[in-house]
Length: 282
Image (cartoon, rainbow, N blue to C red):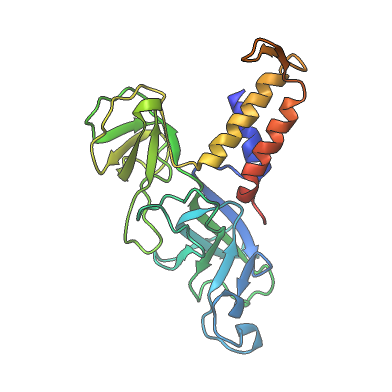
């Protein structure tokens, strides 16, 4: 049920909400890849006779974009591909999330963007519309994982099943790491990650301060906004009400019978309302 509820959240928003590292192939210049004044370049554009390098603005498929780790370009008519990697510092998120408490964690509200800006001189109108194939590697979404083994109180590292997004630097490099929550009932606490043993997959999160409580294996560590978590709870409850039966009858506090018939639809609608601000728009 929880897997179906998570899938429903991702399906409604049109993207995976937890942090992932993705390699996306786009072609431009076109409506998703603009070059010139609309991308922060000088006027007139090279198409009208100015040969000065122009920025490119690329709209990607997932958001919020937390970090761009690489961009490659190749003339679109060149087969097999011969990629040119852009130097570090020539690309960044166009609308990065502001972050929580001076960290790279996206805020609880649906903020951030799905576009990146690429420095001038690598993507232009030399080969016409869709003249370039462009490969962008980027980190997006909300860091989310669980403990792979139990930890005691007072530790400064956490073994987790996914390090993606926890240790990235913000787009101008002034601070590193996400602040999240160890969701453990009465022993819930916030932690700030300063480094990870791997960029993605299972590994270890290094913390800025020791934990206050012990935590069992499987405990969730997340930056996921509470509204997304609540939507997933609604969807999971709707699954419980509808699997194998059209309704479930329970006792109300006063002892009278109460039916959940029709409740699943309302729960799904409430969940979708909570998720609406997080939907992918392009």
